[in-house]
Amino acid sequence: MPTEGWSGPYHGTVTLQAPLAPILRRRVPGTVRAGAEELAGRPAMVVRSVSSLRRGALSMEDGETIRIAAAEALMLRIPLVMVLASSGADVSDGVASLHGWGRAARAISMCSGSVPVVVVVTGPALSGPALLLGMADLVIMTSDAFAFVSGPAMVEDFTGIRIGVHQLGGTAMHARSSGLCTIEAATEQDAMAHVEHLLGLLPTNGDEMAPRAVGSAPDGAAAAGLREIIPVRATSSYDVRHVASLLADDQEVTELWTRWSPQLVTALGRIDGRTVGFVANQPQALAGTLDIAASQKGARFVRFCDAFNLPLVTLVDTPGFLPGKDLEWRGMIRHGAELAFAYAEATVPRVCVILRKAFGGAYIVMDSKGLGNDLCFAWPGAQIAVMGSEGAVQILHRRAAPEERLRLQDEYAERFLTPWQAAERGYVDAVIDPADTRSVVAGALGALETSREQLPGRKHTVGPL
Image 1: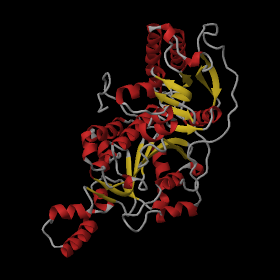
Image 2 (image 1 turned 60 degrees about the horizontal axis):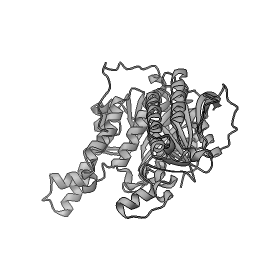
Image 3 (image 1 turned 90 degrees about the vertical axis):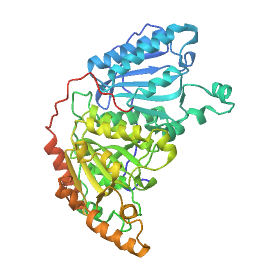
Image 4 (image 1 turned 45 degrees about the horizontal axis):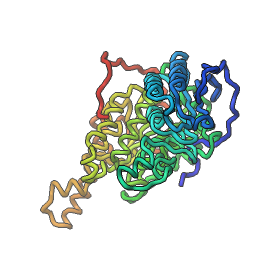
């Protein structure tokens, strides 16, 4: 359950505004309408499919309308918001409808990283339209929405397994298993309230900074509570979202992809008025270990924040990567490298705070100094090492008696499992009082606000996707 002061996804109401400009291609027949509207006090290009017309099937004209709307959003440098409920390509239009979808997909891809792309799914999103969801930055799905490329009938024909539409591609499945759904909403109105809230935290485009807002810092008693949040027992857990909320203005943090890979928390909030992206290991889920889904989730969020100039605050407490032959066979090396690659490429201000455990390869990929973070801080009880004392002694002194091993573990922990050795070598910039974490991080972000990084001239990178 969320801790006190944790807002989670935004819940509110929204009043739909009249279009700011004439609707694009008003007289063109089809199931898609597009035009500029005001969301979160700023203009956005909004595309809506009309599900009551031919179940929202997309014709070639509809694909062209989406393409033009995406091109206009890119030209005007405003967010692109799509509200979709579509049964797929219009069969009566033949291959022309597929051609129109391809042109729309290409235009949306051109928006990626330049303007925020948000999709709201209010009903079915099948085949081609479903793939458009995978191209968006953020996807909000209502409770009755569902999306898949191949439907239940085709699944049964090929596999013999009978399955329902919501079990195959419902909102709950995409929020929990596939990672497609960023936020779950009850209704379309609720979903649009989420859109307004998110756009209020983001810049209009990748050439601007997110708007600043006045917020209050947690009181001294709440900040001092960070000194007690880490349990005495090394194997006990705590809710890292509480740490993030105590760093944020008004103790408000909006978590994204809440149910997908919960051992890694990704959230937006403000510190001293600046929107930041929080990436944090969650000890309450799988002890905060990293697996394939967590690496993908973190890498996607880091790239999103980097594209839209949102500083990154990384809260580290992880014993390492989750072991398992299935994970290795499915590409743990390649997917784990995604997170390292995303951090290494990021040019926004990056502040890392090591709360407790930071071991092995997981320490590296969680925005370590070696990957280029700007400033790294650690709490006094942090443990930074290749591995924990038990594993280290098992390797170094495998023939020692059980009693001797316990003594060696204590010696290893006292010598190596502290932040001081890392600080002496410059891998940690300062060991700080947990109660001072917010003021230290806020000061660091202020100092780094004018930092700029010269990117190498190349077409694009080839990351471990």
